[in-house]
Image 1 (tube, helix red, strand yellow):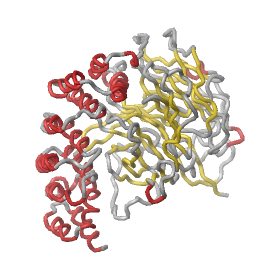
Image 2 (tube, one colour):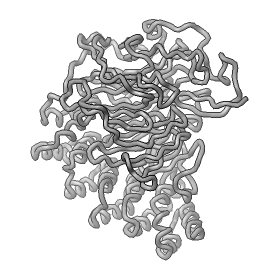
Image 3 (spheres, helix red, strand yellow):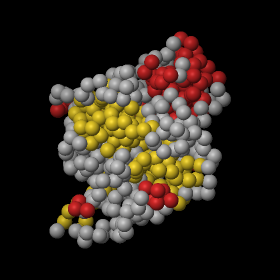
Image 4 (cartoon, one colour):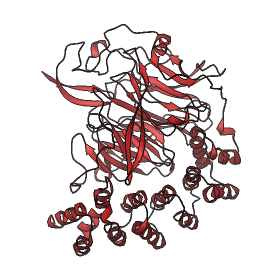
Length: 588
């Protein structure tokens, strides 16, 4: 008899196993431990320690979590898993440490009538929850920790063929959009309620985003497998993990990645982008992605990637190094290894004191096909911290505009991100614009310049003159991000397109990659000058990203104008691009 093995981050076909076997994947043949025992069984580097923040019965099946501007944990429970939609019995819970001892001593029930749910984020006057078939918004304008009304259905059409591959891992991007991930064997067709089928956005194996104000929804990148985690490094480069196929990926707007299965939405993709992984872990399934920028851990951990290996009861750590237009990952060792085989870490994230919170699904089995003895009665939240940590009490909601802008220079990116989102919610004064422009144009650190750039953009205060000045910045990262933001919401001006042509002609490979990604958002007839320049770089022929990203931008223009396509074909110095142009012309 054949069946499907389904874990929180893996899907593959296998023959039936005995109740305590999982085709080579670890199953805990030992009793459960108390939360304190489990914390003690987590092996972390010298100088670190693990604390229990909360545990059963106060929280069970904590599938996702986030933090508000006071550093409180908002935890989403899912006792319906794997049945979807399930019964209206799950909750959004708020946990607070009021005395600074590291353990939550206050528990608040925000909402307790959720069906199967998989993602949560807080901001813009409420709480965002993914509960197939819907993405919900619970308004809480007065911040009293009670919904103002029943939730608004912001988007519907989220499917659940595979109940651990639907919308998940909500997080605010540096550009002010709400991002999430989605797996390969769930086939969603997303739109606002009432949207006709032909106007909806198809989603499978993707990173998506939603603007919290305009409610515009996009498939931001597609492909891979069952990604359950995306995060950005200090220079605003995004990374995600996936399962079954290689585990590590550099997330690029408009990219199409190697898929575990199925087809890309564009039948003329021809080839997709491959992994940046150093190699493969054995018997592994992954969840969560955190680029550590918390300011507490030693310097060797800053800007490195943390993610959980569910089957192997570990928190893995990798660094990324530049490679051509993108990156490659390098193994950095396992940061945490649990000797309790019930530990199922999901979603690491750092907080206002720089410590890292971990939600633990805590289960005897990593895969839910053994449903008869899968435990629904437990769950834990831990805090990985250091001996030098100092308690922090914070409420950024009460901070002034000047204080929020000052936080754009904070060593702990928790403050940077929350302050940036609050500025987006409030709007900027003229004085605030000037203060951020001073950081953008005068600060010597390009990571701080980027923070100011993102804040100005999120608040709608990045003028075209400032944008064009930024396109001449010393840092390739700042120039590249300026290109991305220039093409976000509307067709860029001819002057901006001229600047993009200049950058495409002579700038760094990373900037050319940003140009190629942004070019997908430019009207077809205006792409040709930039495409011609991008295609002239013979040195980019062997780059891991550029030939394909240029093709993804070129393909609809090639289809629309065969005459100009023939001219591009003749001038291209990138063999793969030349081949694909010819194939597309021949397919007409």
